[in-house]
Length: 181
Length: 402
Image (cartoon, rainbow over all chains, first blue to last red; front, top):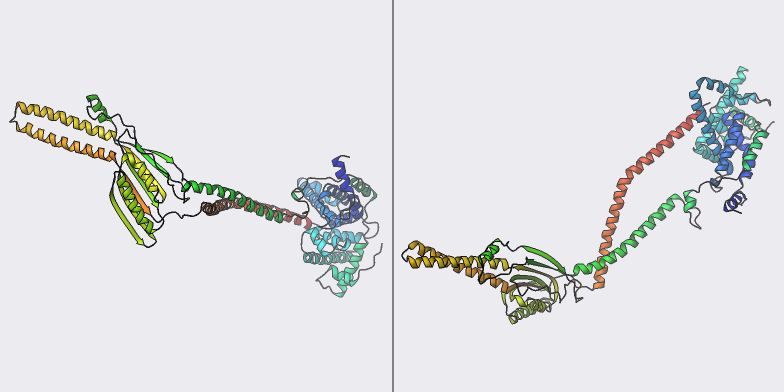
């Protein structure tokens, strides 16, 4: 066995502290996907970004240190960077192709949900990305405020107040839609 | 899919610090329940794609500097700790380098303590023919340059005597060349042990000089207080016996300094001889003229004047010869001098002193480097902070978009 393959096996083998990448991917694929779905409000795009997240995570797996944080937070941090990179490139692209971008914006709207929660999704789409992110982290993924603060790079109290505002805004959005209906 | 409404505690936990009204709390709880009930499961295509990705071998990537420099048993070696360890190591290296250098410097201290004799000699003088110079020789003598002093330094070390700072007893400068007319002047200082020994040493020096055929030209003895005294003596010693005199002086105590100068008087003697010869020739011709016209007052006056000038020149020549014959030795006997300490201890103290000097030099370098690098580092840090801030603001703007 060559040194490189021995190292690869050693990296892949589970230890008490360091899970394998496959294990992490299986355990946290849903979490990552849900986070990205809420962040981008577009399932197709969330699919692509989830794939990109796991590709980057595989590349950076050697940097993961279980003593510093949970795999879930580590993956969501990567997902956030992937999404931000996408937003940046999208912004540049839209800057170049304004007309096309306006069409893209319409395409990016959330599709009607067969399960009947389309109203909630539309209301969510009316929030900013950071508001959706906070809802995704704290409500959907049920991370605690410290973990959420670690992901967004702020303080736990800022996360709590931001979540309060986001939920209030979502409530109002839902109320507005009820009135229109 | 229906999810039970979260408890008020869960709502409070989510909105910690906020206190919604009862209605708001119910609505929020319902909203949370709806949000948690959203079915956002990855599609089978995504599952397959991620499964494919996860089946790959994780990249090893480049090892970070922390992994690169991690010591066995110190996996949590952090940047600040590494910097601290590096600083401590640098101090150890500086001290380790400074001490051997200082010890070598201690050897130099011994060299410094050794004396230097400056021997000043004149240019080799042309062979003087004082008895019968020819016209050509006279012209050559006239054209001969005035005695020009040339320094030749000769270092000689202590004979390892009583004091590390002393020149040593056997430190005798080269004497005058017996075949040439040279004026020798030697200045020497001898440290004696106490005021009582000073008086005795002065007497001994004078008697030694008398035995050598010399004499004491001047003497000055001074004891300002009971602990310190100095005796300045000027001796005239036959030039051929200077070395003997100095050897005798070195027996009086520890020679702490010695300086000798030799000035060649050959050219000066030649010049005087040429002038004397001319005056003699002139006198002969004047006397011859006077014998032919004895009443010529002007010739009489010129002859008398020439005779006087000749006598003065002869006297000057005698003085020059006397200067060559008798050398001058300035002897200072003193109770004061470099501390007569043990050589080893002296070297250690000198090494210790020099260590501080070297440390000051190192600190000077460090401060210079800091002064030079600090603005660059500060600018770099500011640039980095600015870039990070801009990037963060850009991210915030992106995240604030709907």
